[in-house]
Amino acid sequence: MIFDKLDRHPRYFGLHKGLSAGFTYLSTHDFTAVEPGRIDLNGDALYAVVQMYTTRPVGEGIWESHRRYIDLQYLVSGRERFLFAPLEQMQTGIYVPEKDFLPLTGSGSTLDLTSGFFVVFFPEDAHMPGLQLDMPELVKKVVIKIKILGI
Image 1: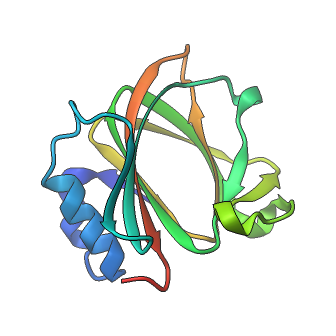
Image 2: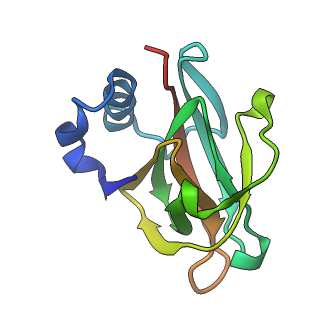
């Protein structure tokens, strides 16, 4: 897992070609007026999903992980809490390959994201996104999906 401010993204360029492409895309676009939806950058190898939703209490959150994709999650506006934990500390459910979704149960640590910050979740990082801090809040987020064996 990586947590940092988007301004410092160049220090992560050598980690994965797709991660570098995702950071470049995020740092060269203004997402404030972009409508929610999918944006293809390189087919299924690299794409962005613009999301807008209201954060929810931790009791309504869902633990997840992915096998085929790295998640680069960038907060455009608002505040969002995440829970995270090493995958090996979680109890796994049944993997859904068509959604690249592995449901999990367990507990973890807290990470709060504010506008301008990003978090990267690798397949070994369990995470629960979309949580509220003090109260429900409208957030706008861009999730870059980076295929592990993609670009």
